[in-house]
Image (cartoon, rainbow, N blue to C red):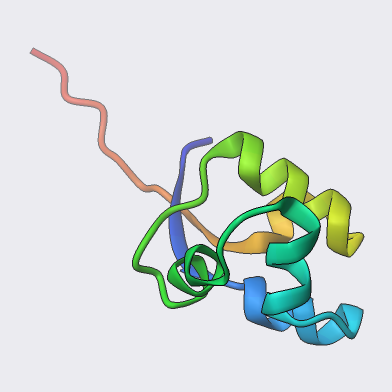
Length: 77
């Protein structure tokens, strides 16, 4: 099954873990602005970054975004 990415759920996962965006940025050695760009859907997390974020805050990588099943029609010619 294919999925489309919905909104970023990083802020919710941070709240659940009791961590802040600033803490996460410091933990990953990145600028806080980058974390806020993910939270505000200005940037999509690259897979390697998403894995690192999930590991840092203790969640499954799939929990970082809404996953929307992609419906498509098979066209027959």
